[in-house]
Length: 183
Image (cartoon, rainbow, N blue to C red):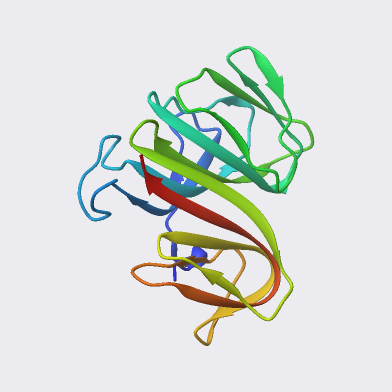
């Protein structure tokens, strides 16, 4: 489990926000160096406090999910988009991307992975039954409600890592299920 409260915050180079890295790794070994600043994939939470450009990550695919605030306006390679809350939005990480804040600061979950090396997905699901099984290699981030894994309570934005074996999440709420694989 990764405690969101324990993650350090790193400001963006342009000063428009900050990022907290939840996890990162490579296609072959999550502990080894990767292709992009030491990683082939990275999961993080970003605080967008001012309009401006997004960081440029050529050769990557990005999946952005608005989790607080909004709406968020994005212009990706000249085309306007307005990703809705809890609706994953997929785009080219190397594209020229500008953000506008239509009603104040926004918090996003971001999955970035090397295109052609990795594949990934983000699904926002409602945890309403007695449990949800995460398969090996999946992660889950709690967005709303309450949940526990192996008797440990999750706080909002805490992340469950299902490695090296499956994990069972109990509770009621909304969470993102992240799946990564190699191409």
